[in-house]
Image (cartoon, rainbow, N blue to C red; front, side, top):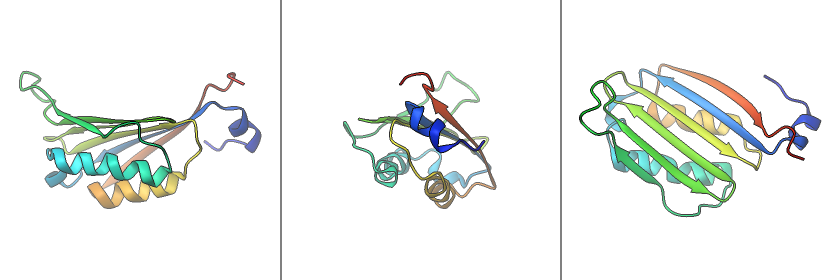
Length: 130
């Protein structure tokens, strides 16, 4: 969806949701790779990191949900990632009160995880905030 300049000025935040299908499997279960992805994403959107990224492995008892979840808190909000190793799926959420370049994020995600397909949704958050 395309938003007008006025709508963007009135919004509190910007939220990009990416669903990545049939990604290259090498990085999906790699804590260091997902840490690197989150760490680099902060620079790509021009945000301010509050602390380093955190990446966790899904507990073994969640059969079919094997993968990683990670988050990096930024002053402007946060960036999260969830991988499902078996299905080669990655979901990425970029939420910031500072506007960012959607195409740069999509291109970086495409180059990093090499999915066959990326679905994207973009939302304005807090449209009645101001």
